[in-house]
Length: 220
Ligand SMILES: *Cc1c(COP(=O)(O)O)cnc(C)c1O
Image 1 (cartoon, rainbow, N blue to C red):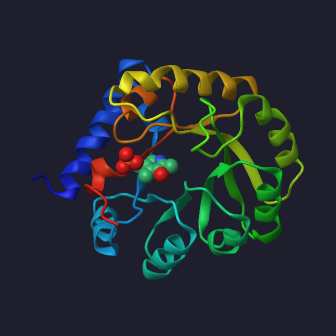
Image 2: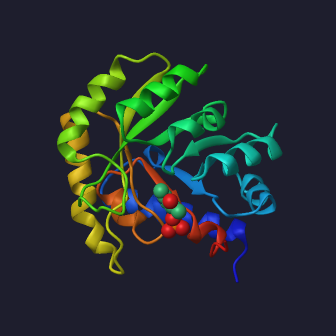
Image 3: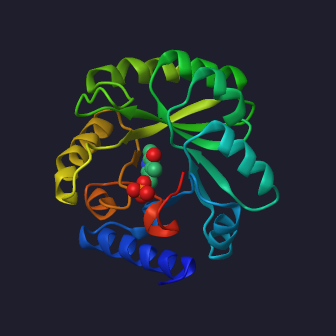
């Protein structure tokens, strides 16, 4: 089995190739290593392999890991559903929050943050009741509300397409998110996971959130 470092090198190469296939500069794609349910040792190995951006889904886990990895050059991305009462655990550490889905959440973040926090609005493109995120028509009003807030800056949109075995099934969703982002002049698109990140990059992803392909399977 390849080492974590070898997997990282392989993923970077795949990111590079996907970008070049569509004439994009590979440097415009950020790799967010989703380390939820993975150990501090595995994260240290990724850091040793040059990885700096890490994504976490749970506020308490982000807080504990930020404390364990203090002093390491880590840029934390919060990619899970964020409850307002957990905002205080996330804002001291997160450079990015990918999952803004209400004005109330954005306000809670702005009220607690002391440093600039880059944000994305999570969009529920397929209207799945099991997923968080706003409907496409709710993006513009939410973006306008965020623009009035201090300390947080809206950078882009994020989505998780419906689960599918064929990565091509994600393509129409990625394309739709890119169209919605362009309409609002937003630069960032957080889309693409282990199974479909190459398709996401072909459709314009600037942040891919990859867990399993880097760290292996997650165990609860
Ligand atoms: C778990 C998770 C990922 C990573 O998923 P993999 O399939 O393991 O790459 C990406 N984004 C979000 C929001 C997640 O919850």
